[in-house]
Length: 520
Image (cartoon, one colour):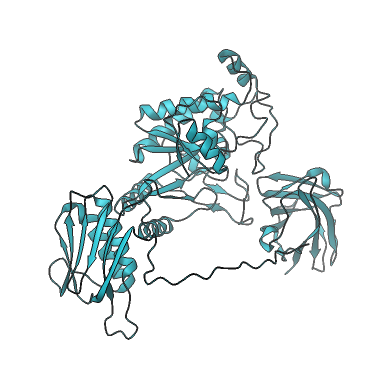
């Protein structure tokens, strides 16, 4: 360890939410360091005026501190105090995430970060209620379950398909039995059978699972019902403690159907990239718990993760961040190049994998905010030279919003949405629409002219102007627009837009009362 960084919470204020912090950088070498700066990753905004003996530049979570005195003496230290806008800091994970020393000669040195010294560590112990143990660990719990005496041993199981609608469920159940329980089912012969039968009288997604001491019967009307029944069966299966019966299922009759039409989960692969194998692993787990929607967050300020054939720059530039890249490091890997994206063939593979498990994939292309990776990848299209607006986003960016006044913005959106719509068969495309900061578009000649043309009074109305265009474009492509609450700001999109609620229950209720379909 040659360099060490200590961070201490000195005080917290209520009038102005934030914390006063002390930063101490120690040189543990026998030689001095000249003309240095400290780079570190911190996801709270540091007020530049709070530093007395250094200057600081912040882009997102990436910070570069440059001392007024460029010498760090051998076996010496540098000390400064700073103010970070923040809720009270209570956890050791609230400190700096990564750090490096950089010299004007281009040298880089790793810095060891010690745990943050908290003023008031979180000490409240969570009291967990005593919950009566259930006989069956089923999640979600089925609507109707009857338990009978006995159990069925699945030593050699025969899968009998009585309807082609059960084909995906049979393939998935076979794979899960083999992977989790080392049970190799057969479609030709076996001691016990699992029958997959069509029941046209059932509701959509409804299923019935019956386990007797002789066999198992699964009934459903649609493909997803067979998949959900298979998921329930997998949760019922247990290894015998004495291994006399390696795998068994209790005798039950279960009748079930989903309470909610939409049961989804979002994975953010823009900020933190996950391999195709990791994405598939998550999707498989979602199927085990009967989810039916995978919301794939593919673009953001920090990266662009989806291949767009018309704009290869989006992944050549926007899919990586780090030292020497257009995009600075964020969150982690300050000394590395952090990169990754999904080719269109990989995305098709993920979509097919999810579909075989009864899960639809909804892509999110986040606009007009959260667009920094796109803007820096295609500056000739997306940067407005006349825009001198001053703003700062919630994530501490000052240059991450598309301009509704640039022709390049519409060329970009038309091309991207066309490729995305062709790639994803689901009827929805999520366009984000969240976190557009105050002050955006307020000092742009091009935006002023667009406002005058349409009679807009406030620059914020331009967000609705752009989203209305996107909604119309998506309708022409056969898709329905989905967005966070902010998508309906300005009353310019139609009630056909679906609202994902994330800010509060009140915001969700307000959107629902206005006539929007809302997903909580």
